[in-house]
Amino acid sequence: MLDIHQLKVLTEVARTGSYTAAATSLGYTQPAVSYQMRQLQQAVGTPLVVKVGRGLRLTETGRSLVQHADAIFSVLRAVDQEVSSQVARGGGLVRMVAFQSSCVTLVPELVARLRRLHPEVRVTVTQAEPVEARHLVRTGEADLGLLCNWENEDLPEGEATMRRVELMTDRRCVLMPEDDPMAAQETVDLASLASRDWVMESFRDRFLAACTNLGFEPRIVATMDDVSAIQALVAARLGISLVSEMALSAHVAPGLVYRPLRQWPLRRTYALLWPDMASVPAVMTVLEEIRGIAAGLRRPPPG
Image 1 (cartoon, rainbow, N blue to C red):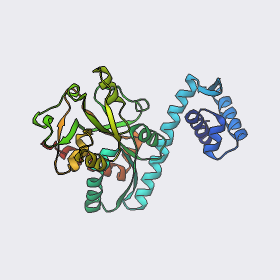
Image 2: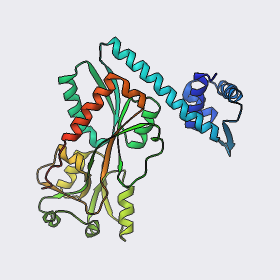
Image 3: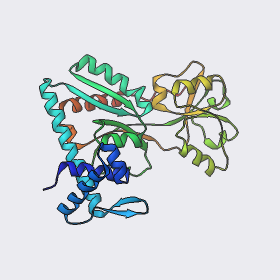
Image 4: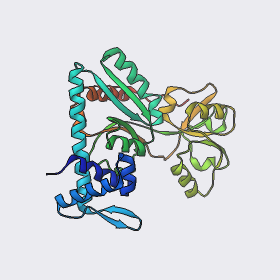
């Protein structure tokens, strides 16, 4: 019989890459972690980790067991949530994690709807980029995540065993002053912007790679991760920017316009959760409201 505490130690060893780091994370001593791992490997009858340099690597059996352990922990969290919801007469707390654009569009409308239609359901929200958000959902630190990726990307690692609910797509847009020469075009080609100054977000690897493929290095004059700050700097004519259509649907500063970037993949927004969490009434209420909000979010006119 597998021990739930030993499985927890295994998943933490897999996440941190060492017994020492796992012990620190769990609040155990290093010998205690070693003992739990020895007991688990004896119960399974085969090694679960092997040493690689100064670190550890999971064996094939270890990887399989970690996947099953994640699913087991998900079931336990779902049961805990469901019992809590029943005690609260259909209510409950849903811990959400969401990426930046959704925090200024989907999330505020969700909170308003819950207060109006489902006052017994409460949410907490943490902003995080998709990689971190995926980790928080997988480890049970969040019940539901709002994530995004590009339509031409493969399924992100770690999502194969989880439930993914597609919500909407939006475009990448060039934000500029309304009197900019490019504002007369319906869509903008990135190559035509090679000589421009840019106000960009920190996460811009795809943008930089696209510029490199077109043979130029963009002049980035400011790095900002706040949409309002980006708009203020573009309005001040420090440079132009690339901003998601979703973020711009919430607000566009006076004097600015945006045009979709030509031949750029659509961005997909989706909800991510463990399948068992879908049986929790509070989580399903939140998910259904998000789906309704996303379905009603129409693309605003670009001008």
